[in-house]
Image (cartoon, rainbow, N blue to C red):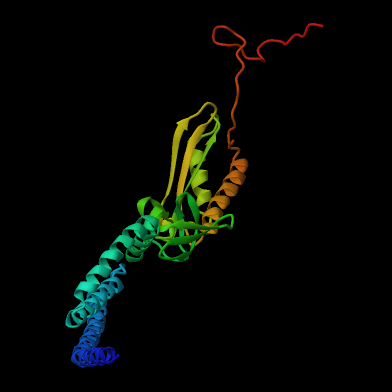
Length: 296
């Protein structure tokens, strides 16, 4: 019994001595961690300040990324130094080895999430579009409602909300229609063989110049593009201001209505398909050249 009591007392004295021996190390480790946290905060603020002065006109958003990376680097360095002072490198190494195996398993399970987050980081740096822009992504056309680390939310013209994974956006192609605040309309139609082509061109250009949405400084193009089966086909190109999809639709709608009305006034025919019936073997015979006889 006395042997057991003596053993317990010895263990307790050893524990007390061990605690007393480690108190300076613990205090020093805490001081090191706090010092490196302060250094990390100072460097992060300095990085943001320097970046804002040097790259004032840059459209990138990498200042937060660089500042955060430097901050975590110094904090982690301070933690590792503190562990070294406490002689905890070996237990930490075993812990990290086990965490590495778990990380590999989790990596396979969450690789898509990681890819989307990394793509979201790159999109945040490049900023190819912003909230309120009209875009076409993955064949989805609409206005951007929200940009997160994993997905981009779009409200389509029919009114549905579509969530597009950032990985698809970064690995594929997309169009931002709001970048230049203008959009080109390409209108195609055709007139009959009997119309004066110069007159058709003059009338069409004159009507385009009258719409409110037109950007006249961008110019208007008119080209006859093809001789069809029953038409002379033409293409009309012009630029309109673009703040929303309604501007584009209205710019096309107004020109179509004006050209239709003006063509009627000028006796210009917007042609439609015509079929010729050939009753002859050589060269054909007009249906009205001969009297049509119907046998009883």
